[in-house]
Length: 546
Ligand SMILES: [Ca+2]
Ligand SMILES: [Ca+2]
Ligand SMILES: [Ca+2]
Ligand SMILES: [Ca+2]
Image 1 (cartoon, rainbow, N blue to C red):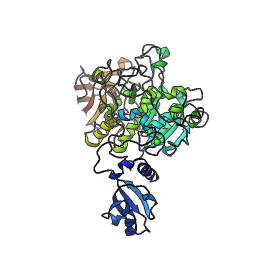
Image 2 (cartoon, rainbow, N blue to C red):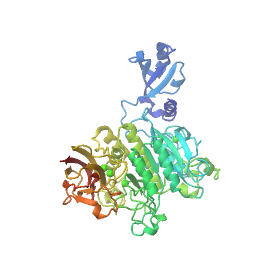
Image 3 (tube, rainbow, N blue to C red):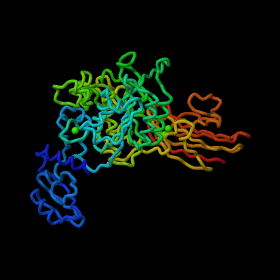
Image 4 (tube, protein in one colour):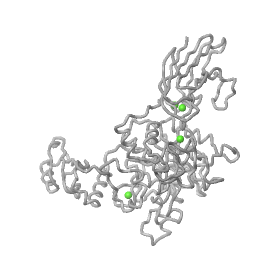
């Protein structure tokens, strides 16, 4: 409620031109007289008493300035305008420098600043935060350091990311963050020397998940080089942490990586963790609409693009104090040179994290994969006609599904039909997360996605001298295949071929697999549904044991 009031006061102070359309509800204290408060409110405009029995008055007024101070007013809630349908524009003094907000259509979905959206916990796994920053302090739920030292941010990166996601909007201070209902879980994993501890990262992800994060932003990464294992930084620990988060329904968003940290530029492979299944990999766009030269390319793991150059955001005040004559203390304009024109996929990713939080706030029942698929499919294609001469039409290695469009994604989750959920994720391998195909027969509806979820694995108990029949129909694409793995299988990745006891004859949208279990071979087998070419969609799997 306090935040609501703060929004309202600021809106009234800073946007007098819009005040003619103000419509707001006023709650009256239990001990106060409703008629007396109504009389006091008359100076603001027409007062409706339709809800007076609920001790609520609705006002069509010229302004909300001072309403909160009227004796007996318990709360004030902005109801939006009935006449205006254009998007609201944040009134924060530096918002005009946030050119990326327009390109993201960050606030176009709402005619006025929305109030009353349910809070969504967003974790920022980064270099910490300026805990008492005036544009951030009210947005931080919890902060914890997983490296030595406090959560204080001495590098600026984490505070910068936090501002993009959740700097307070219309508070007459600094910038406007995109994720209006975000509550931040801040996890510091960057050491004083600027390196990220993988163990700290894994602990931070586990903590964020256990604290109820719905979104985790990972603006960090390590080099991936499938052709040269000696410099490839794949970490099974990081993969386990990501899998834990994905299995708990968390949206993971990661920077695709910058080629100035790679052997050649542009680098053709996304960094880890963006190159892990179920992670949204975010590439960077220029203000002119092309893909940033430094932004890593990747045919599989580049999912979506967002602005990543000349980004303005918050910085720790301890850093901007080094530049004492600069007016915008606490903001990147006053930071060291590399923050004054900040660029990097690190600063593209937070816009997508914020967008995910908005979608979840708008429709809290969304699963992680529904959130991500909606964001990706609502993106605007990036191609030659939109400013990227080297980007082909449709999904590509430079820009993924295209430019983030928050308003389109919010419209899709509000009005459109949602992508099918997969209730069984993560089930990418044999192991704890995979739900069993129990009973003599049954069916299961789930999804595959070439770019994020190429494989689903289901344990199935089979009895010797009995026959298993599997059929599958899909709209996933023509590259689907069924494979059955023996009880000795410990992972379907890199498994010895003798462990594969059956497979469907050829790939296709319809699949069949039959297997007669030999004598003495009862046990827990693993059925794998997998795909090998671009496509995504749902499938229905039927099983029968005879
Ligand atoms: Ca602000
Ligand atoms: Ca991905
Ligand atoms: Ca799946
Ligand atoms: Ca899967």
